[in-house]
Length: 233
Image 1 (spheres, helix red, strand yellow):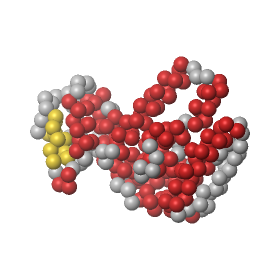
Image 2 (spheres, rainbow, N blue to C red):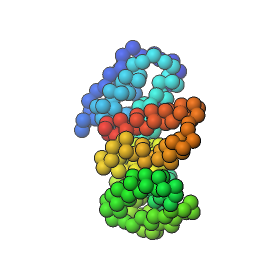
Image 3 (spheres, rainbow, N blue to C red):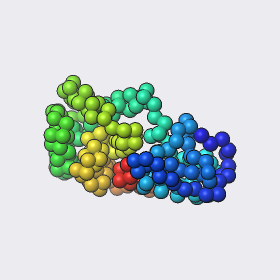
Protein backbone atom coordinates (compact mmCIF):
# COMPACT_ATOMS: atom_id res chain seq x y z
CA UNK A 1 0.00 0.00 0.00
CA UNK A 2 1.32 3.45 -0.92
CA UNK A 3 0.54 6.45 1.27
CA UNK A 4 2.13 9.35 -0.60
CA UNK A 5 -0.03 11.13 -3.20
CA UNK A 6 2.92 12.17 -5.34
CA UNK A 7 5.56 10.23 -7.24
CA UNK A 8 8.57 9.90 -4.93
CA UNK A 9 10.56 7.07 -6.51
CA UNK A 10 13.38 7.40 -9.02
CA UNK A 11 13.68 3.86 -10.32
CA UNK A 12 11.18 1.09 -11.06
CA UNK A 13 12.30 -2.49 -11.58
CA UNK A 14 11.01 -6.04 -11.53
CA UNK A 15 12.62 -8.79 -9.47
CA UNK A 16 12.10 -12.47 -10.12
CA UNK A 17 10.55 -14.59 -7.40
CA UNK A 18 9.66 -18.28 -7.43
CA UNK A 19 7.78 -19.99 -10.27
CA UNK A 20 8.67 -17.32 -12.84
CA UNK A 21 6.69 -14.64 -11.03
CA UNK A 22 7.95 -11.14 -10.43
CA UNK A 23 7.64 -8.44 -7.78
CA UNK A 24 7.78 -4.75 -8.67
CA UNK A 25 10.05 -2.39 -6.74
CA UNK A 26 9.89 1.40 -6.50
CA UNK A 27 13.50 2.06 -5.56
CA UNK A 28 13.83 -0.46 -2.71
CA UNK A 29 10.14 -0.56 -1.75
CA UNK A 30 8.04 -3.48 -2.97
CA UNK A 31 4.93 -2.27 -4.79
CA UNK A 32 1.74 -3.40 -3.09
CA UNK A 33 -1.88 -3.30 -4.15
CA UNK A 34 -4.53 -1.02 -2.66
CA UNK A 35 -5.22 -3.66 0.00
CA UNK A 36 -1.54 -4.09 0.81
CA UNK A 37 -0.82 -7.31 -1.09
CA UNK A 38 2.45 -7.90 -2.92
CA UNK A 39 2.03 -8.17 -6.67
CA UNK A 40 3.13 -11.50 -8.14
CA UNK A 41 3.13 -11.06 -11.89
CA UNK A 42 4.19 -12.85 -15.04
CA UNK A 43 7.21 -11.27 -16.73
CA UNK A 44 5.11 -9.67 -19.47
CA UNK A 45 2.66 -8.15 -17.02
CA UNK A 46 5.51 -7.03 -14.81
CA UNK A 47 7.11 -5.25 -17.77
CA UNK A 48 3.87 -3.36 -18.44
CA UNK A 49 3.48 -2.34 -14.80
CA UNK A 50 7.11 -1.18 -14.70
CA UNK A 51 6.44 0.92 -17.80
CA UNK A 52 3.34 2.50 -16.27
CA UNK A 53 5.06 3.33 -12.98
CA UNK A 54 8.13 4.70 -14.77
CA UNK A 55 6.06 7.28 -16.62
CA UNK A 56 5.28 10.68 -15.15
CA UNK A 57 2.01 11.39 -13.43
CA UNK A 58 0.33 11.69 -10.06
CA UNK A 59 -0.04 8.54 -8.01
CA UNK A 60 -3.80 8.43 -8.50
CA UNK A 61 -3.29 8.60 -12.26
CA UNK A 62 -0.63 5.88 -12.29
CA UNK A 63 -2.76 3.51 -10.20
CA UNK A 64 -5.60 3.87 -12.70
CA UNK A 65 -3.49 3.00 -15.73
CA UNK A 66 -4.77 -0.08 -17.48
CA UNK A 67 -2.33 -2.85 -16.52
CA UNK A 68 -1.80 -1.59 -12.97
CA UNK A 69 -5.53 -1.33 -12.36
CA UNK A 70 -6.05 -4.86 -13.68
CA UNK A 71 -3.24 -6.31 -11.55
CA UNK A 72 -4.46 -4.55 -8.41
CA UNK A 73 -8.02 -5.80 -9.00
CA UNK A 74 -6.93 -9.38 -9.64
CA UNK A 75 -4.62 -9.37 -6.62
CA UNK A 76 -7.14 -7.86 -4.22
CA UNK A 77 -10.26 -9.84 -5.16
CA UNK A 78 -11.82 -11.52 -2.12
CA UNK A 79 -13.67 -14.82 -1.92
CA UNK A 80 -16.95 -12.94 -1.54
CA UNK A 81 -16.17 -10.85 -4.63
CA UNK A 82 -15.20 -13.98 -6.55
CA UNK A 83 -18.56 -15.48 -5.68
CA UNK A 84 -20.28 -12.41 -7.09
CA UNK A 85 -18.19 -12.69 -10.28
CA UNK A 86 -19.18 -16.36 -10.65
CA UNK A 87 -22.80 -15.33 -10.35
CA UNK A 88 -22.54 -12.57 -12.95
CA UNK A 89 -20.73 -14.80 -15.44
CA UNK A 90 -23.26 -17.59 -14.99
CA UNK A 91 -26.01 -15.05 -15.71
CA UNK A 92 -24.24 -14.07 -18.91
CA UNK A 93 -24.24 -17.74 -19.86
CA UNK A 94 -27.94 -18.05 -19.09
CA UNK A 95 -28.87 -15.28 -21.54
CA UNK A 96 -25.94 -15.27 -23.95
CA UNK A 97 -26.58 -13.25 -27.15
CA UNK A 98 -25.35 -16.10 -29.36
CA UNK A 99 -28.50 -18.01 -28.34
CA UNK A 100 -30.68 -15.36 -29.99
CA UNK A 101 -30.64 -15.46 -33.80
CA UNK A 102 -32.88 -12.94 -35.51
CA UNK A 103 -35.47 -14.38 -37.90
CA UNK A 104 -35.42 -11.17 -39.94
CA UNK A 105 -34.18 -9.19 -41.73
CA UNK A 106 -32.72 -12.02 -43.78
CA UNK A 107 -29.28 -10.43 -44.12
CA UNK A 108 -28.91 -10.09 -40.34
CA UNK A 109 -30.24 -13.64 -39.82
CA UNK A 110 -27.65 -15.09 -42.18
CA UNK A 111 -24.81 -13.12 -40.58
CA UNK A 112 -25.77 -14.23 -37.09
CA UNK A 113 -26.27 -17.83 -38.18
CA UNK A 114 -22.85 -17.83 -39.83
CA UNK A 115 -21.04 -16.31 -36.85
CA UNK A 116 -23.02 -17.70 -33.91
CA UNK A 117 -23.45 -21.31 -34.99
CA UNK A 118 -19.74 -22.28 -34.69
CA UNK A 119 -19.67 -20.74 -31.19
CA UNK A 120 -22.81 -22.58 -30.15
CA UNK A 121 -21.42 -25.89 -31.37
CA UNK A 122 -18.09 -25.28 -29.66
CA UNK A 123 -19.67 -24.29 -26.34
CA UNK A 124 -21.95 -27.33 -26.31
CA UNK A 125 -19.04 -29.66 -27.01
CA UNK A 126 -16.55 -27.98 -24.66
CA UNK A 127 -18.91 -27.84 -21.68
CA UNK A 128 -20.96 -30.97 -22.55
CA UNK A 129 -24.17 -29.00 -22.27
CA UNK A 130 -27.16 -28.05 -24.41
CA UNK A 131 -27.93 -24.45 -25.43
CA UNK A 132 -31.50 -23.59 -26.32
CA UNK A 133 -31.64 -21.28 -29.34
CA UNK A 134 -34.46 -18.92 -30.25
CA UNK A 135 -35.35 -16.27 -32.80
CA UNK A 136 -37.42 -13.81 -30.77
CA UNK A 137 -36.67 -11.15 -28.19
CA UNK A 138 -38.25 -13.07 -25.32
CA UNK A 139 -35.99 -14.70 -22.74
CA UNK A 140 -34.96 -18.24 -23.63
CA UNK A 141 -34.80 -20.58 -20.66
CA UNK A 142 -31.60 -22.63 -20.56
CA UNK A 143 -31.31 -26.09 -18.96
CA UNK A 144 -30.85 -25.69 -15.15
CA UNK A 145 -27.73 -27.88 -15.21
CA UNK A 146 -25.88 -25.36 -17.40
CA UNK A 147 -25.33 -22.95 -14.50
CA UNK A 148 -23.54 -25.55 -12.36
CA UNK A 149 -21.38 -26.70 -15.30
CA UNK A 150 -20.26 -23.15 -16.06
CA UNK A 151 -19.65 -22.30 -12.39
CA UNK A 152 -17.57 -25.45 -11.85
CA UNK A 153 -15.34 -24.49 -14.77
CA UNK A 154 -14.89 -20.93 -13.52
CA UNK A 155 -14.04 -22.09 -10.00
CA UNK A 156 -10.88 -23.77 -11.32
CA UNK A 157 -9.45 -20.47 -12.59
CA UNK A 158 -6.99 -18.37 -10.63
CA UNK A 159 -7.66 -14.72 -9.77
CA UNK A 160 -5.94 -13.30 -12.83
CA UNK A 161 -7.66 -15.58 -15.35
CA UNK A 162 -11.05 -15.07 -13.69
CA UNK A 163 -10.62 -11.28 -13.68
CA UNK A 164 -9.59 -11.29 -17.34
CA UNK A 165 -12.57 -13.44 -18.34
CA UNK A 166 -14.93 -11.23 -16.32
CA UNK A 167 -13.68 -8.05 -17.97
CA UNK A 168 -13.67 -9.57 -21.46
CA UNK A 169 -17.18 -10.93 -21.00
CA UNK A 170 -18.39 -7.45 -20.06
CA UNK A 171 -16.59 -6.00 -23.07
CA UNK A 172 -18.05 -8.56 -25.50
CA UNK A 173 -21.41 -8.99 -23.80
CA UNK A 174 -21.10 -12.76 -24.26
CA UNK A 175 -19.59 -15.38 -21.96
CA UNK A 176 -19.28 -18.07 -24.63
CA UNK A 177 -17.65 -15.72 -27.13
CA UNK A 178 -15.22 -14.66 -24.42
CA UNK A 179 -14.36 -18.25 -23.50
CA UNK A 180 -13.89 -19.22 -27.15
CA UNK A 181 -11.41 -16.36 -27.43
CA UNK A 182 -9.78 -17.36 -24.13
CA UNK A 183 -9.30 -20.93 -25.42
CA UNK A 184 -7.92 -19.65 -28.76
CA UNK A 185 -10.86 -21.11 -30.68
CA UNK A 186 -11.61 -17.77 -32.34
CA UNK A 187 -9.50 -14.69 -33.08
CA UNK A 188 -10.00 -11.30 -31.40
CA UNK A 189 -11.29 -9.99 -34.71
CA UNK A 190 -13.93 -12.73 -34.88
CA UNK A 191 -14.98 -12.17 -31.28
CA UNK A 192 -15.31 -8.42 -31.81
CA UNK A 193 -17.37 -8.94 -34.96
CA UNK A 194 -19.73 -11.26 -33.07
CA UNK A 195 -20.10 -8.73 -30.26
CA UNK A 196 -20.95 -5.91 -32.66
CA UNK A 197 -22.92 -7.71 -35.34
CA UNK A 198 -26.22 -5.92 -34.68
CA UNK A 199 -24.60 -2.49 -34.40
CA UNK A 200 -22.63 -3.09 -37.59
CA UNK A 201 -25.80 -4.13 -39.41
CA UNK A 202 -27.66 -1.06 -38.17
CA UNK A 203 -24.80 1.18 -39.30
CA UNK A 204 -24.85 -0.44 -42.74
CA UNK A 205 -28.52 0.45 -43.03
CA UNK A 206 -28.73 3.82 -41.29
CA UNK A 207 -25.17 5.10 -41.03
CA UNK A 208 -23.15 6.15 -37.98
CA UNK A 209 -22.96 9.42 -36.07
CA UNK A 210 -19.59 10.84 -34.98
CA UNK A 211 -20.19 10.47 -31.23
CA UNK A 212 -21.11 6.83 -31.70
CA UNK A 213 -17.96 6.16 -33.69
CA UNK A 214 -15.82 7.72 -30.95
CA UNK A 215 -17.40 5.46 -28.32
CA UNK A 216 -16.93 2.40 -30.52
CA UNK A 217 -13.27 3.29 -30.95
CA UNK A 218 -12.80 3.63 -27.19
CA UNK A 219 -14.59 0.34 -26.57
CA UNK A 220 -12.40 -1.41 -29.13
CA UNK A 221 -9.21 0.01 -27.61
CA UNK A 222 -10.29 -1.34 -24.21
CA UNK A 223 -11.09 -4.74 -25.72
CA UNK A 224 -7.73 -4.83 -27.51
CA UNK A 225 -5.89 -4.15 -24.24
CA UNK A 226 -7.83 -6.95 -22.56
CA UNK A 227 -6.82 -9.39 -25.29
CA UNK A 228 -3.19 -8.44 -24.67
CA UNK A 229 -3.61 -9.50 -21.06
CA UNK A 230 -4.68 -12.98 -22.19
CA UNK A 231 -1.20 -13.41 -23.67
CA UNK A 232 0.46 -12.31 -20.43
CA UNK A 233 -1.23 -14.43 -17.75
